[in-house]
Image 1 (cartoon, one colour):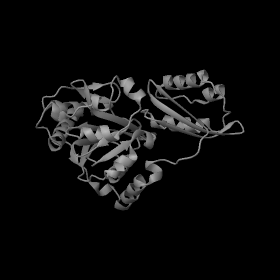
Image 2 (cartoon, helix red, strand yellow):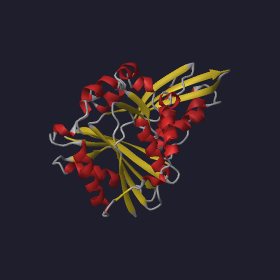
Image 3 (cartoon, helix red, strand yellow):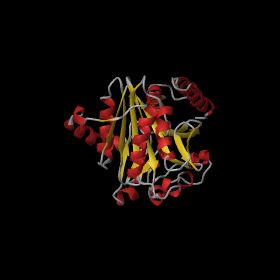
Length: 326
């Protein structure tokens, strides 16, 4: 096994997400790669989220903000230069979320802050989240990426993110600001630069090897430009808007689902599912599964596909449709 790392000084979200995807596609069979990056004045939404519902788009655009959509599932996050992003990329046999999270936890502990993993996708200090994590699985490799809030502008985070009241209630808080913390509140001298150094040191400690600087010669500049342009397109960022006849929304134990159905002659002709659920690929399978299904509660419930990652997710959704009155 070899460990490699790359730090970019680019702050454009479309270029950074494109590089992440290309690094993911080029990962070597014996490699664990750590990629450190920052976006300036950006809201990044999960792969299946409704952009208009998660971000106050007009107000954010007026402040020169940029909206980006990532490959992984999960919820919306605000990025600025007081936040540090990380990505761990590895083939399936070396991919280990617990080990990767330990790198971040140890790095933060180096500043005298007691950091702990909480639930499936958060790292907390003093009972509040400073790092939200999300995941993407491919055929041969996976990646795990997340944030480290250091000195982020919390007023902008509260101003532009618009999570549903049901989501906040599920977290037991009244606002998005109430459940997050900047590390400078616990260690005033901490900076993004010192955090990057601490993460690289912890990477070496956890994996027991000296990480090597990644040679970007494996990345084709033309492909990078092409993919960055695709990430910037409205069709990817905002999604394709279509007319629909029925919509339903429910918060489940694993996240929120918002269903939009177009129906003709009693059959579903198009289905769109928005979600902050972590399993982005299963949400896409949901959309496909409903097309051409009779629009009635029993048929919709029976169409819900199994989720290989968690059978309980499918049971919850099927139960929701069985209990519904159309």
